[in-house]
Length: 229
Image 1: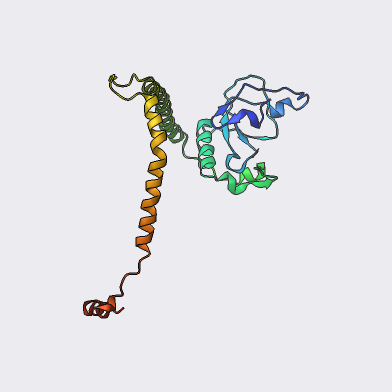
Image 2 (image 1 turned 30 degrees about the horizontal axis):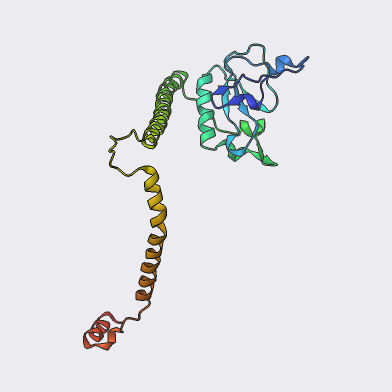
């Protein structure tokens, strides 16, 4: 049987399919290809997460932690999946949930009250074809971006390694060695810190001096009067 842990957005994870006795009720809970499964209980922003059962594994049922939608003759199951994915991202399902102990529940009664547009069947199929083509492009771009990120990380690591090994640029035997450079920095650092403290103290003293008031000279008085100060 399938449960919440198996149902992700537009994907059913079959890595952990469990079994139990459905004697007497199997036909009631048996899944048919094209059935849409939605999470009945989840965190609020994931409640109603939908996926389509496409026939694998065969002879499988679902538990009451999921809602099942079975399309009628005038609805393409792929269209139903698109509508439910839209509702998920628009947080439409969140408006219908009941929350208990931080888990949101979407009852079948509240699920039935959610709007479901039904354009002509050929229009549904045309829209779904366009959407699926665009989502395929998005998936391909995301895959390419992930690949480039991996290449960028590997390139950065290789550059840093060459830099630390001294192989990034041509070496000059007269250059200061790394050990000598680090030792010079260690020696010079206290003197530089002392100089910064002196400069900071001097700046602080200068900023605390009181400037003469504008009214101390005729020109200053004129400026204050003109500005209404």
